[in-house]
Length: 255
Image (cartoon, rainbow, N blue to C red; front, side):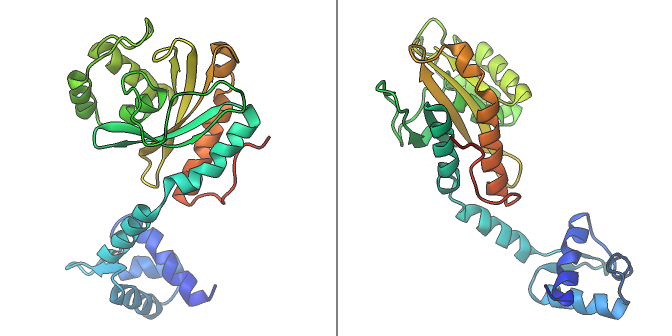
C-alpha cells in the first residue's frame, strides 16, 4: 500500500473516536500539518470526512452510506452455509439458520441430518416462536420494551408439557438467554426433539440471525446434544466474524 493511501486511511479510525483538529491529525500521523491538510481535503472531497464550523473534522456522511450499503449487500445465508455444512458433517445432526422478519422468526437455511429420521422444518417456514431456540436468541436481543410488548401479545400454545406457558415465563427465558449467550429447546415443541442454538452477530454487534443444531432423542439424549454446545458457539462466532469482516472465510468445524 502506498504511504499516501496508508496515511489517509489512518485518519478514519482517529475520527471514529470523535472530531479532531488539524494539529491532532498531524500528530497522530507524525506528518507536517500541510501533509495532513492535503489528506483531509482529499477525504473531504469524497465525502469521507466533514469539516465542522469549529474547524475540526469528523467522519463524513458518504462513509456511513457506504457502510450501510455494504451491510445491506451481505447475504447471511451465503456466508453461513459452509459453516452450517461443516457442523453438520462433524456431528451428523440437523442444522438450521433463522432470522427475525416482520414479527416472525423464519428458517432461511437447513442442512439435514444423515440419519433416516427427518425433521418437519422447512426453509421459509416460521418457527414456533415461543419455544424454538433460534427464536429465543433473536428476541432476547431486542430492547427490553420491545421484548415485553412482544411477549405480552403472543399466544402460548401447549405443544408439549415443556412448552413455554405464558409471557412471564417467556420473558424470564429471554433474560436467561440474553445473559448466557445461547439457547435450548428440550422437547418444547416436539417431545422427541431437542435443540441447542447460538446467536450470529452482524457488524454492529447486534444479533442478526441465529443458528441451531437439532436431534431426536432416539439418536442422542438431551445431555449428549448439550455437550455439543461449544461447537455450536464456535460455528456461530466464526460466521459472525466473517460477516463482520474480521476473519477470513472458512468453517470453524471440520469432520
